[in-house]
Image (cartoon, rainbow, N blue to C red; front, top):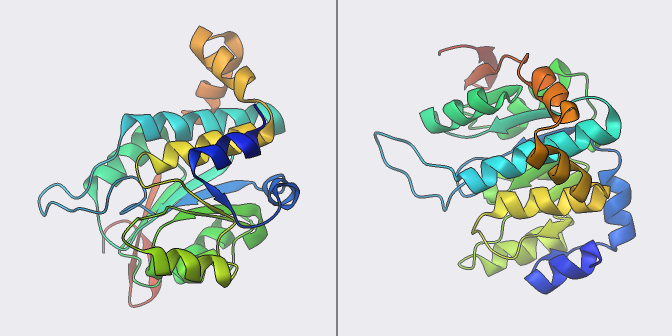
Length: 231
């Protein structure tokens, strides 16, 4: 089934014509994720932070593999979050994301650091987000994917009306997986990526070898300045 039709039937909302959405996506070289409310429902436990789902984790890996297949290089991937979360650090290091930005009270400052550190333009970044603190970054990015919370219909409308969202997910249940599948479908190589991964073939192993050479860099923000390592 056509990707646009499939995700519209799921309940997702495209905030611009699909051809425009695809055109923006084809320029993407990097993926940035918020954490709370994106990888989970936003509930925190003081001792353990907030969790993630393996369903979503698989989605991020397949998205990166699909990008690698299509472009011949790894996309740059990062998490930018307002808190320090050991679970986010665990996932990022396990999956070999390029960076995690903790304590990002000013997310735009962390985002600008991310762009400079990776020689990227804002229009080359896809951003997955869910709430007010993310809008400064969403306004800048080339592709904005908003996680819909049913309790925040006005925020959904605000983001769409002010052109800060290009796609709104069907719900906040495994929203990262939904976004990753959407982007893989838009790229046109979903079946190829899944087939190679399921067989653990030589192509997938080469991608995995490239991916696993990465060392995740941990950044913290203090008084608007971004530094590597502990505050």
